Amino acid sequence: MAVTANLDKLLDKAYESSDLEQLRDAPVAAIAGVSDADADALNKAFGIKTIGDLGRNKYFLAAEAITRLADASD
Image 1 (cartoon, rainbow, N blue to C red):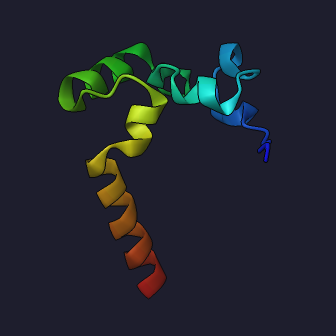
Image 2 (image 1 turned 180 degrees about the horizontal axis):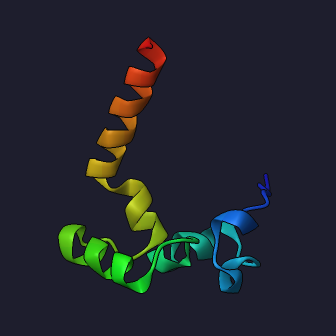
């Protein structure tokens, strides 16, 4: 089943026409608002090079889970 979504507001212009698999493998700086310096810092701190790496990172997943649980308990 094909999945479609308009992610243009989340991405730099150069990546707006990319499919999900291409985005997963795209550099973190493809996300709108993430600079090359930010991407370099993520790589140095956590070994994150791609959007997929960021989405699978155990520290970011833990922070998201904690935040969602805390928000749900409010």
